[in-house]
Image 1 (cartoon, rainbow, N blue to C red):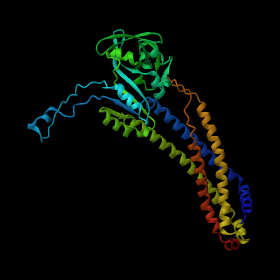
Image 2 (cartoon, helix red, strand yellow; image 1 turned 90 degrees about the horizontal axis):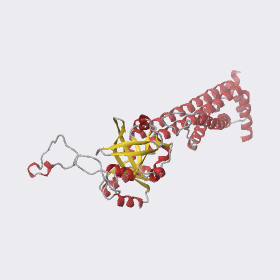
Image 3 (tube, rainbow, N blue to C red; image 1 turned 30 degrees about the vertical axis):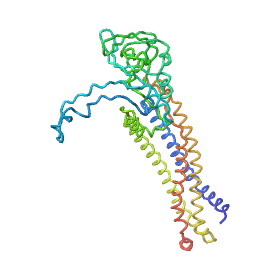
Image 4 (cartoon, rainbow, N blue to C red; image 1 turned 45 degrees about the vertical axis):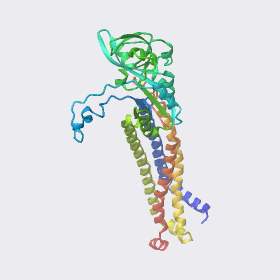
Length: 419
C-alpha cells in the first residue's frame, strides 16, 4: 500500500475524531513540558546546593591528620609479642600540622598532567574579640588568585575584592555570620586572638557567604602571610595542599597514590562529601521517576483513544480490508495516527518546556544566605529535551501498536454480517 493512501486515511480518521486527537496531543505536550521543566529545575537546584560545598572542596586534600600512633610502645616489647593487647585511652601523637617540604610537593604536583591546579592553605584557630566576649573562629590563609581560579572563591565574596588580601596588609574577609555578630563593616578593624594568646588587629576588606550559616559564623579568610604571622610561623609553613584535578572521578585513586608517594594523609572529594552526592542522586532519581510517569500516563491516554476509535470504526476497517487493504496496512494506519500525535505533541511540548523553564528562571529568588543567587536555578541541558522527545515517540508508538495490532486482525466478513 502506498504511503500516500495510508497518510490520507490516517488524516481522515484523525479529523473525524479531532477532539479526542487534540486531547491526546495536549496530554503528550503537557507531559513533555512538565518533564523538561521539572528535570531542569531539579538539576539546577542540585547544582546550586552541591556547588555550595563541592565548589569549595578540593578534589584531593593533602594534610597531616591528628591520629593515635599505629604502633603502641607495648607492641615493641619482646615480652608481649604474639599477644592481643587491649589499650584504652590512647592519645594522639604529638605530630606537626605543618606539611614537610610543602614547596617541593607543590612543584611536583604542578608537573602532574592529571592536575589542573594546586593551591596552598594555612588554617589558624582564633578567637574573635567582641568586648569581653570571645567568639570561636577559623582563619583560612589562602592565595586568593588560585582560590578564585580553581575553587570559585569570588562567587562567594561580596562587598569587597578578594585580591586585596595580597595588597592590604593585615586584612581579612569575614564570614557573613561572624560579621553580623560583630556588627562589622568594610573598613572596620577587628581584633583576633591566636591560641597562643597573641592579639592581632585586622582590617575588614569584604565578606564571604557560603550559604551554610554555621560555617559563615566561624570561617574567615586572610592571605597566607597574614595567617602565618598569626600562628607565629615562617613563610614556608603550609598546613593543607588543595589539588584540583582535570577528572573529578579519578580523585579516590589519585588520593591513595599521593598518600603512598608523599607519606602524608590524603582525602578525596568523594569521601569528604559523600552525603551530598547521595542527596543529589536521590533527587535526580525522584525527578526522572515523576517525569517518566507523566509520559507513560499520556501514553495510556493515547492507547484509550485509539481503542475507542477502533471500536467506533469497525465497519470502516472491515470495508478497507474487504476492498484489498492487508492487515499490515491497517496496522500502519493506526500506528501513523499514534506517531503523528507523538510528533506534534512532542514538538509543541519541547517548545513549551523551554518557555516554562525560562519563566521559572526569571522568578526572583531572594535568600539572605545566598546573595549570589537572584533567580531560581534552571539547567538547560540538551539531554532533558532529547530524552523527552525520544520517550514521547517510543511511548506513543507502543500506545498505538497494540490497538493497531487488534485492528489488523479484524475479520471483515464477521463485521459486515453483524451489520
